[in-house]
Amino acid sequence: MKATCVFLLLSLALCCYQGIAEANGAAGRGTEPACDKFNLSQGCTKIFEPVCGTDDILYSNECLLCLRNLQRSTNVRIKNRGMCQKPSPRSG
Image (tube, rainbow, N blue to C red; front, side):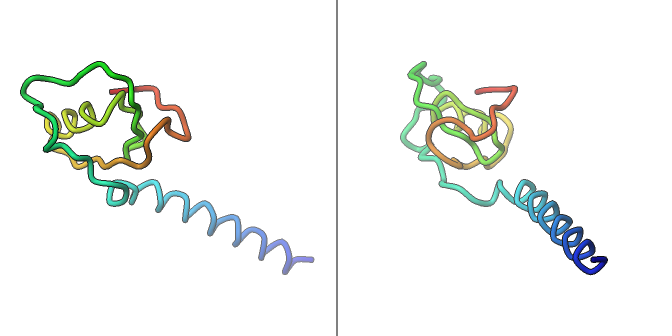
């Protein structure tokens, strides 16, 4: 019985550790946005074509993700097109 409890606790700890590691390493994965097709100096359209960034923030469209990367000198990539799995409090 003790061995089973120890095994379950270790399994739970390993699952939690992997979840934290995935969240911290997410910025390196995803698809590179095609920022060169946008004229960022003129701004972005208001067309709603949502993309979820690797920072788990929902951007209204790919152009806004590119603009945010330019403004903040970051390299957020596209995690998926459409809504994020977990809703974020901020949006681009």
